[in-house]
Amino acid sequence: MKKVIFSLLGLGLIFGSCKKDTDPQPLPDAPRKAIIGIEGVSPNGISSLAYYDVASQTIENNVFRKANINPLGAQLSDMMIDEDRGRLVLVVPGSDKIVFTHLDDLKIDKQYGNFMQIKNILQTSPDEYYISSWEFDGVYIVNANNGNIKEELPVEGIGPTKMVLHKDLAFVCNTGAFLYDSTVTIIRTTEDTIVTKLIVGGKPNSMVIDADDNLWVLNGGKVDNSNPFAAGLGSLYRYNLDTLNTAIDSGWAIVPDTVMYFTDNLLKPHSLTINKEGSQLFFIGNSPTGSVFSMSTTAKRVDENPMIVGNYYTLAFDKLELELYAMRLPDNTDQDGDLQVYSPAGNLKTSIKIGVKPKNVVFK
Image 1 (cartoon, rainbow, N blue to C red):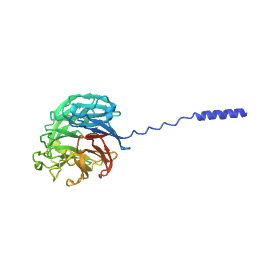
Image 2 (image 1 turned 90 degrees about the vertical axis):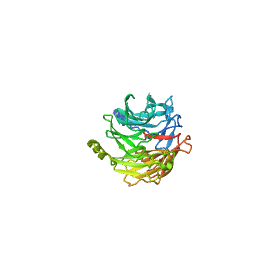
Image 3 (image 1 turned 30 degrees about the vertical axis):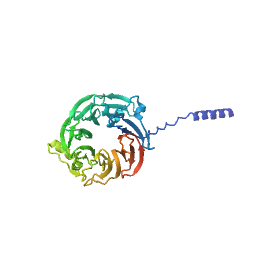
Image 4 (image 1 turned 180 degrees about the vertical axis):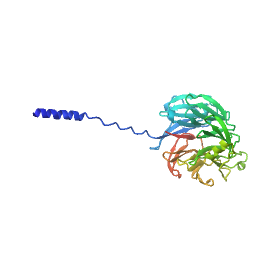
């Protein structure tokens, strides 16, 4: 009888040890990173990419070259993440090309040439990109699946650069390039046709949309190299997009809701950026570099007192960590610049030496 009892106990131990394994624990999220686009030495220096680890506040340089045999090319001007395809798209005007890389490891998927004097990129639909170009003063309309140029659409302005999308309307800043312009072209992206143009301040260069669906256009002002004191004033134009759409549908004239002028015509503001809540504007107060300024979207006039003093090139806002990324250049712009991360109030969190002319930021 004792043998039977011991046998049953043994079986119980065996079966007990073979109970179902616990469910595997999910893997921790990969460290969040900012991808920093580095323009390089002007005019033909090789551009590069760097990873900034948001949590550890550390930099890994030359990540594109580490992932690929071939260098990136010259004069990286813009980049964009296509989330649906897990793709990073790079705009490289010095090499007349765009580059598709895999977002996870930055390995080149495809490269496409014959894109002349390109500047900025915007995804206007799941299968279509716009790329602004000074070659024909328009936008290349590109098939996002294969990189083929579907159409070259002139914007009826000079020097198109930055673009922003609201529903099916793409807004294109016409900076005037080396000449002069004061317009923003509006394109209906569902038809790839020009709707109209906004008449704004001199040399518009950047735009954002705030929490109340207002379009803000930052204008640098007319440049006068022979007599800088005779240059035009910079300005901020604000358009309510609901009112603008009604005006378009009704054929009415489109006028801004608010126009704010800078009092100092030597300030040539650029790089307009906005916080996550869509309530605080940031911009750089001179071109090509200057101090960082900030103002509320409810302000009645521009704030000409700098929040951060220095030589800053471009800005970006991290809407997850609520941090402002500012790219600072040294007096000798062919030397390495700095990535600086600030709170929205302008308190410095970190400053890290990075490559020559750090310019673009996207987050993965």
